[in-house]
Image (tube, rainbow, N blue to C red):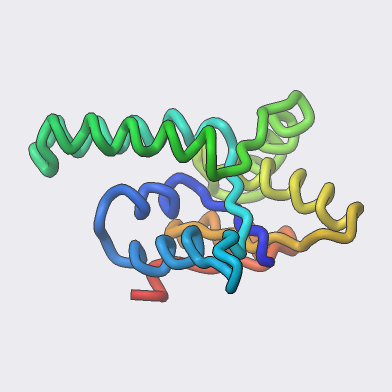
Amino acid sequence: MTIYYLDTSALVKLYVSETGSRWVEYIVRECDASGSRKNTISFSKVAIVETCAAIGRRARTGNITPDTQQNLYQDFLTAVSQDFTTLALTDEIIFKASELTQQYPLRGYDAVHLASALSFNKILRAARAGPLLFVSSDAILLQAAAAEGLTADNPNNHP
């Protein structure tokens, strides 16, 4: 089993068809012989709001219909409660994210994603259950993740 951390740029690919969507769908839905999901998909709770905003933005710009918007929104919220591991924001994560903004040219929520992934990776390693694989379509965030010692991958490299 692989434990993945998806930032919002990767998570949105499950709901909006774009480069890398098929690969993200594969890692999320991959099952073993018994039909159990092979991978754990995790992300920060901020990705919930960011993904919902991306779905809404697609509808407002006319890329999807209002009916599609509502279906995607509901499908996503159902998946959040049933299929994914969401990570709460803690003071430790917020302060680590703040530090990361001083080390790397990260946007605020990108720093929160990286800090969340680093915190979760630390927990996984302590439990001998990790490491996780950090997934993002953002080149700057991927560079920062790699510099922080995470294994990182870009779904856009898997068309």
